[in-house]
Image (cartoon, rainbow, N blue to C red):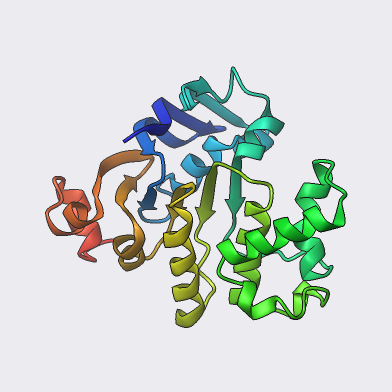
Amino acid sequence: MIEKIVTHDLSIHFGAVEALRGVNLSVMANEILGVIGPANSGKTSFLRAINRMNDLHPQCRLSGQVLMDGKDVYRDMDVEALRRKVGMVFAVPVALPMSIFDNLAFGPRLQGIRDRRRLGEIAERALKAAVLWDEVKDRLYQSALRLSGGQQQRLCIARTLAVEPEVILFDEPCSGLDPISTAKVEETLQELKKQYTIVFVTNNTKQAARIGDRVAFFLMGELVEVDTAERLFTTPKDKRTEDYVSGRFG
């Protein structure tokens, strides 16, 4: 398998608080890497380091490297170019207060695409990839705010796909969804990994076991263990991993 993202001795501090300590981890192309761990374990800090969202924090200090396709994202890549390659979907879906179609066209228009037919093709492709097309194809010009929570989350996924990234980061995208909507999002992710590399932070260990090709366990800023989902949840190497996945803490 090809390494898409590699971190070398990645450490992050926010002021005096150490969020990550010496993380060495590879994410393979076209895999779903699940990231699990208790609160304040560094999961989201790791995720945000990949597309430099931690840059927005005035007290953030980072050492080590984050490489994408062999290029250092902090030294060799413009942040705007990086974020065109790396999309992010958050825990709370934020549908823009406009039509479903205009939500999908928003990113491509910023990239200079104005042709209505081309925008329509992009919207249809993205909605199909997000397993939402059949549910909204007859109401593309209605407000996106009228969609259910689960549909809005898949719309946010589609909006990310519309700008054709290579990597998609998910920060607990199912935390506020009902089981049926969660299943739809999980189905979407399984389809997306055929074309994209996915890093998926979740507090739900069962979800990580269901959809992760590999799973990384973080604890107190340290990467404790990374392995295939099957091995990590059945025969973990570290006692701390075993305690967490068995529910003895966290």
